[in-house]
Length: 253
Image 1 (tube, rainbow, N blue to C red):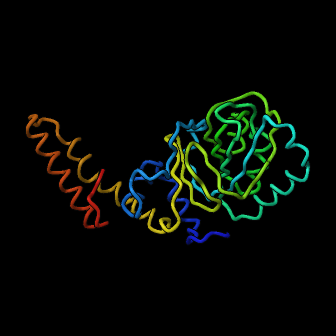
Image 2 (tube, one colour):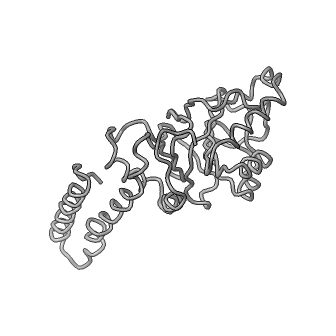
Image 3 (cartoon, rainbow, N blue to C red):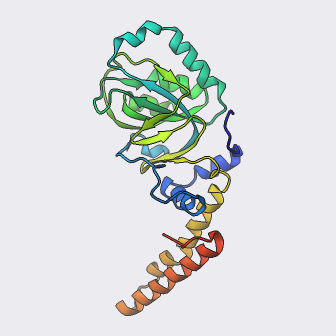
């Protein structure tokens, strides 16, 4: 894979997939040099049309479309063939990041039953589309997950316009090869250099929460209000202490 980051082992990717995207974010903010409000998550609303499939994780492959413009079809069929060869040349698992130049309008869908099956065969696990998708049941049956802006009926003049390039989806910049984690909450695009510590950090943060604040809140039955607040305050201090010991950060939650 032509990435500058350390490619994670397949086992690590499988473990990352076991956690929801907010948990991955919680770990990321403890290990990154960026601010917690850095634009690495979706800045605009996304919709997960296959939430029952759970999270997906993979490396970004990118494509730009503009279904409203018929002139792009002048490059067919070469464009489709060259685009598919680009997708096939990258090791999986991959998430296809699609910038739709028609937005905020939605003219047509790049995705449907056919493209979902083709991309699944080429090692892609899903897509994040700053536009529309269709054939939701058929895409789900293919095992291909998608986050998108909305649904639509037709494909219009959907064809690859540009690929393997930086794109912007839902207000977030994505470069080919970046690690992406997504679920019904949205997605996070992991900055280069933050991948290797991400899994351990997410697990540690989840354990810290469960063993301190959440445990204190759930064990407060029978306590007075003041006793409950004191117990939660103490647990919050313990959470901060554990997080600072592990990450040297201020222990946000």
